[in-house]
Image 1 (tube, one colour):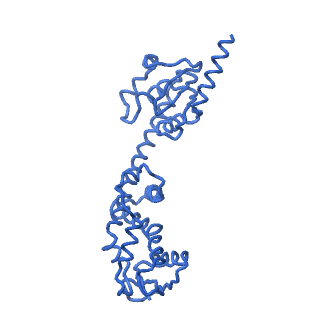
Image 2: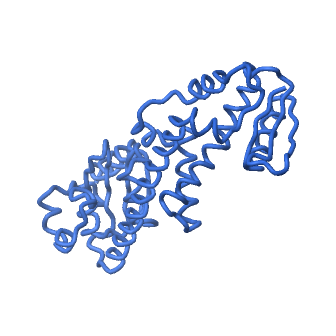
Image 3: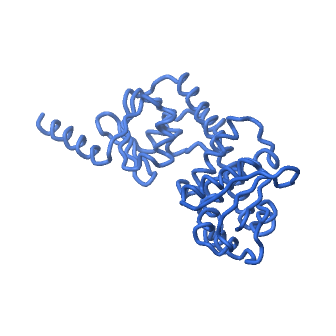
Length: 286
């Protein structure tokens, strides 16, 4: 039989859960007066078992690395606020699941599963038990370092999110006090390049926009304010914006929607040409 010793009872319980999930026989027991009092026992005679290795990999990826991330947040970065910690952990979990590709691509490639598999299967066959904490400390250091990189990225992203929310709030406050300059504005957005039109599809060129530019936005403008899109929009303070784009989830499109909220109607790009054609046809008929 082989045994894995844990100092943390929840770790031992989780290992047992993953074992049962993978139909691997396991016993969960406790020893008194030991630095690692909780242990799991498998009937296999060596560590060279694909089924137990699968349990180990799932235990590491689905349980232990998020616990390490929590520990780093609390002990290395001193995050004590529950809401802040929770949001950072959400970002970390999104990276773990592959959802935040724009963040993951900032990391160097690291073969997590092959590394874990090789580390586990390299355990000496003549040893019948292993202390998990010692094994993790000495054999899994590259994996631990990898988790640290995830945490660093998540903290940076969290800080940027906070700054973004402050920025959005400031622009909403400016808009709330700003007098409306135009009842309706059409914005055709393609590859983050906006073209402005009035209600009658008359294009507003740079000279037109400069005449209505609110200079306060230039004097007090944060570096994140886009001079070519957000400054004209905020200066015009339209009562309604028809935003035509096939990039509704792009950063600029979402920022426009976040600032102007219910004033924005999001439409597919093709609808711009359809509406323009209809109005042109009416004018021709008249």
